[in-house]
Structure formats: structure tokens, C-alpha cells
Image 1: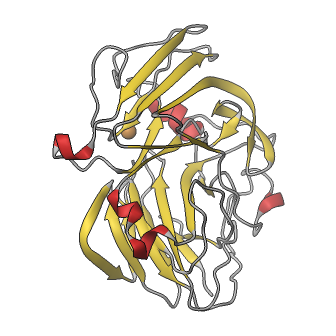
Image 2: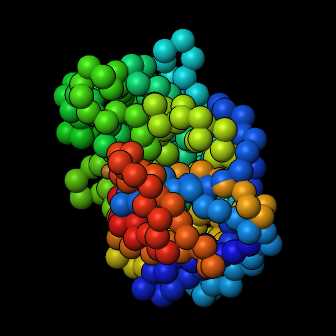
Length: 313
Ligand SMILES: [Cu+2]
């Protein structure tokens, strides 16, 4: 098999692999991934399992999980047309790739839970600000109202405050827009969002749609890769944005996780660049990547290429 090469200015690599729990049961073979902030891809495995060797800074969280099997964030699925959850925005102890760190987080996890619903459903998020600074929530790319308690980035939650966001996700046919797709959520408070996002406050948001139900796609093993870039001091405390001097890349909070893929297998990968400054050039040594979506939008045809540039979200 192969390595997924995350070429940043410092050229890091990691190896990826793992089973995922999801609404759909995964059976077959293949792999897909995406770009820009998000990409959907398919990758063809040829066996073997690579091991990453990356110049991850010594100041990153310990390499306890380097090369470990990829673990995906918890998945919260809608039921009866709604998905309701609470997100606690905090700065403090958090689990990141199985290791305790001190950083910005949602519900004590980095990245936050994956939210999974369908067009026409409603997402309700009660955000509580346990930070000592203001924050808020943005659903990146969702075609929803930007006003009131929907995707209103002018809402500012002061420390200790809670706010009930509600996002009515339109049916794609009525809007004419490409609603189903791969989105994400993160704080979007002018002046503070970079630090909070780089510190770990981000999560994936999947709106299922036609593409996901195509026979050639729906049965593929699906993996979610949330790429984040940040830096920790020797005590595992995140460095704030201006102090970072040697960033490390994490996939679902893990440094260089491994993703198993059998010879000839195809998997679908949803890849999110949940960073505000990191450009990632994705490549799988000895393989082409087959891109089927880009920044939410399904492509008209499959783009097969050696590498895919994923720009900061
Ligand atoms: Cu955004």
C-alpha cells in the first residue's frame, strides 16, 4: 500500500488506516477524497501498509500514537428530521489522538464530534462558552440563513453564556444549490477565530445527498480525515497562534495515523483541512487519487490526479 503524503512547507508525511462507524455499513472496496477546504476522494489500494516518518516537531504531543490506526471522531446522526446536540467551548484538558493535552476544544475533544444529517433536516446546537473570551459558531458553507439564531457570525457569546443555534438545511431541489456535501463547523468570531480554530475547535458536518446514494459510492468503506495544524509546548499546552514556530499536522488529532487498505480496494475519504493557514498537498505514493467532490460540490466527472492541493478552510 502506500503513504499519504501531506506536503506542507516542511513536508510531513503520515500513514493512515482504519475502520469507521457510520450510518452506512461499509463493505466494499475503494477510496475517495476531496479538496479546497474539503475534498472527496477515492483511492485504490494495492496492499501493504506504509509507515510514516515525519519531521513532527519535538514540541508536539508525544508520539504515543504515531503510526497507530486512524480513529475517527464520534459521529452524531440525525433522527426524525433533527440533530440536536450541545457543544461546550472550552480551553483546558482535552483528548487529542488518545493523548491528554491542554487546548481549545469542543466537549473536551479535538476535533469535535462529526455531525451527520440530510438535506431538509434541522440542526440544533446549543453552544456554551466556557472560555474566558468570546466565541461563537459558524457552519462553514451551509446554505442557510445568516440571520437570527441561524448561521449568524455576529452573535457573540461572552464567557459563561449559552446560545441555541438552529439551522434549517434546505432541500437541495428547492434551492437549486448544491446542498448535500461535506461541510464543517468552527468559531467565527472576528479577531479570535484563528486562535480558537488552530487550537482545535473544529469538527466535520456531513449533509447526505444523491452522491452518497449512488450505487458505486454508497457501499464503499468511508473514512473521515480532519487535518489540523498546531503546536504544543513540552507540557502539552497549545501554543497560541502568534507563538507557533514549528507546527505539527494532526489527522483526527493523531500524528501520522495508519489507514489500512487492501490490495485493489477502493475507499471513500472525506478530507477536511480544518486549518486557517496550512496548505496541504495530498499524494499517495504509487497511486492516483480520484477526486469526486471539491468544497462540498460534486464534480461533473472524476478527476484522477497524482496530488491534490487542499487549501486552508
Ligand atoms: Cu469557515
